[in-house]
Length: 415
Image (cartoon, rainbow, N blue to C red):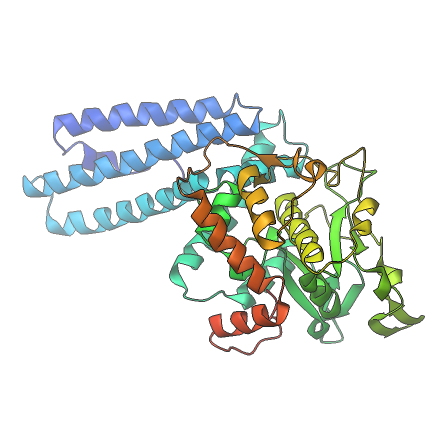
């Protein structure tokens, strides 16, 4: 993460007096913002101060670049002196700017993730460390997304594997940790996208209340056996919080949404016999550390599964297995924009979502979330995308292959 400006003062001393004064003022503001961070015990306040610090950093480097240019024009420095320090300052400004943009556009996500990490309140050092970790990944993902014309599934898988410590080698054979079946031959697993990568769009960002929803975030992934990933994609299963345990990190379990499939083979033969879907129904997901997928992404997938079941006329009795104290989704939070979510429900399944499913898990507005005048158009666009790519998995998978230039990869079709 960017550090306080460390530009040689011998160059600033050659700049016009007004710019030297301006640099001093900006540096004092930046120092003040950094000092205020040490007094923050609230995640929201911490992010606000961090963004202010980054703003002052960008402004400082911009002012310094202007001062260098004026010092060159006045003959205070030579071209040979100018070019290396100018290039160095440009690189520093770009690095700070990338972090500032990511922090502002994804502030809501960052705040949720820091809260979900647990044990951070009142511990500034922990907040700083967690912030650095999450921002390093976000800046890298956002930068990569801007430079690529297609989704880098191989990179995504590596990030998800690293996030969950989900890889080992046994006798030269790569194995992956499926959070429902344990260590599995890597080729039999996929890096599943909780929110399908094909939905990355302006509409989705508005629904989540952020300027940019980067779906290459490892928290949007799970390593799953390929048969379980297919079931998640088709809406045969859902992943929900363990209702009786809302501690951090969150515990999750699998629910079968179609009881008529309970006696169907899920994974084939194992050491004790064939694994049926009834054997997995209610099974808790096991992780190798404290890292978990983001609640917002799993809530979105739950909503999509609910809408798929509605559209296909399936029974919704399975939702009662996740119900706790009158709430169909046990972990409350401002995950999705209420008005947009209700619109999507009416357009995708032509029905309404029950009040208990949305009353504690949505927001009407959120600090830092983008405003949108034409919500109707966004709703139409996103609902069309969901109808085609979620409710009809075969069409969605074909779209994903075409979007990736028909690349062949073990994870290419994981949407």
